[in-house]
Length: 276
Ligand SMILES: Nc1ncnc2c1ncn2[C@@H]1O[C@H](COP(=O)(O)OP(=O)(O)O)[C@@H](O)[C@H]1O
Ligand SMILES: [Mg+2]
Image (tube, rainbow, N blue to C red; front, side, top):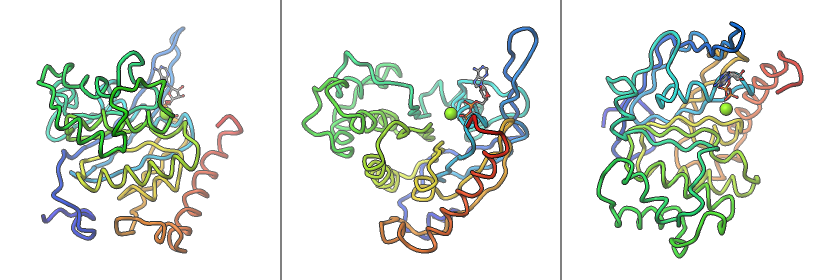
């Protein structure tokens, strides 16, 4: 593995996944009466195969818009997004993208098992019961196969969401604030779990988060966006080897980076008043 990422440094397994190229992308949403909202502008970013990127920035700066363009749920107004060599629409059509967004809820009338079998049905593929069983084990939900989502805690539901996003072994994983609604303790636990899951299969991942600790725990690089229209304000490489244990997260070096990025976010958010 001669990948130029941090992969070699921290003994990651073979890198799987597609690179992503965001090529001077802009997005303008048309509004009523001829008005429009410019969500992002001039965003250029190359993400290597198997790289983990965290996207942070003030609320409303276009993070979700960028992610939705990578997922081909939204088309860029200017520029282009390519996943692998292809337009993301091709990968989406082949179900090679895994997405977990805070609002793409599980189907409440289906069991955990059936929710995890759903991506196979959508992709018209035979359900791999073995894979589903392994994933249920991996995310710590053994014994809850037949439970309905409302019988689970918020943290357990998010684990099912994460499991569902990787069930088809996607080449790209897109996560939009997947832990946003959870309490701090549950969040930290799921962060550690996501790190473990990703290290076992380090697929190209883009995680939108407003949590600087989460970004530093998980990412190879952190991309900081400016207020709307979002553009790249800063890119920070995270130097810590994995697994990033509590020893790492309690180190002065880690805290220095938390402070730096928090100050960046405060500064960027402050520019736009108090509505963030
Ligand atoms: N479908 C849409 N139609 C119109 N405006 C939108 C739409 N989606 C997002 N926006 C606007 O684009 C800007 C960026 O939104 P979003 O990407 O959701 O930001 P973030 O995820 O960083 O909070 C916001 O001003 C938002 O109101
Ligand atoms: Mg968002």
